[in-house]
Length: 131
Image (tube, rainbow, N blue to C red; front, side, top):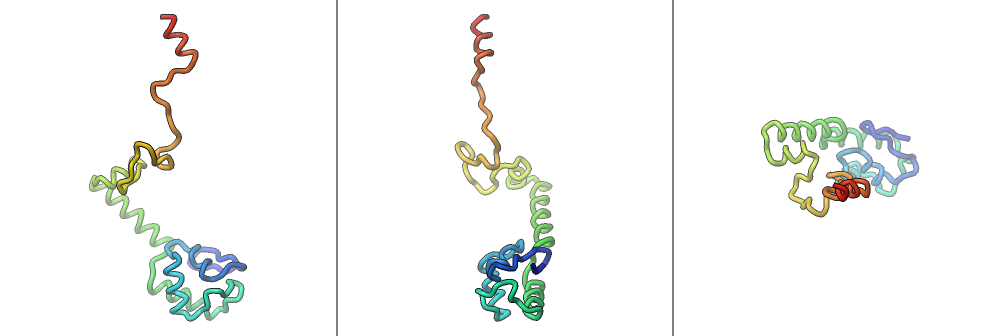
């Protein structure tokens, strides 16, 4: 197993896929990095030489912000939005969608489990009928 910028790359995977396991690198960036380093995309991680790995690391360091610094920048941006009191910051603080999606019928992932309002249990219904 190779380590690249704090991420572990599995030996049996293709290098184009393995690079996407690094936070901040997707398919397009992976493809661009491999073109710059002149590494074939179908090469397995276990077949990568030390020189090729060093090339990968230097190109990623020079051109892209990945892993820790990228996570830090994103959290600082969200923190700034909260501090200035913007709408997006408020949505982040409340744990709701911040990009205009509807929440009346969707957004279960963000809003959590359904909480029924207004429905009474059988015991509570029986008590109200007695009174």
